Image (tube, rainbow, N blue to C red; front, top):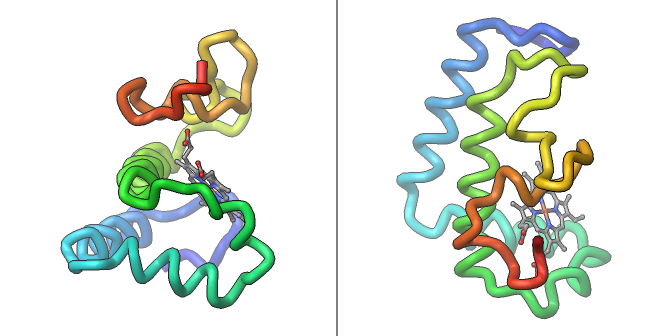
Length: 106
Ligand code: HEM
């Protein structure tokens, strides 16, 4: 198992994905994730005051799935995780399906 640093070995990735798969099939996992997060980090509550959590759960599930599927990308090479339609690096909009974005997201 890896203990941190740049390289994450195959076994660690497999264990992480298997763990995340178990989370995803657990009823109420994402509800529990946000209630635990907001209980432990009350400063973040205001940020989510107008959030549609049903939609947010789907987006977070999708985002974690992408993160776990692209662990080995070299940091300097733009990937689906970093690209945005305008060509700038670092936007989230490219990796969120259009149907799941905020209407204000280009
Ligand atoms: C690995 C960590 C994280 C991932 C993968 C993640 C992922 C996401 C995704 C996919 C969205 C939806 C974007 C959209 O609507 O287009 C989102 C929204 C958001 N995230 Fe995160 N996030 C992370 C960490 C955090 C943290 C630590 C905070 C706060 C301290 C945070 C605050 C927010 C807020 C306020 C929104 C907007 C919610 C809304 O639309 O009402 N996120 N995040």
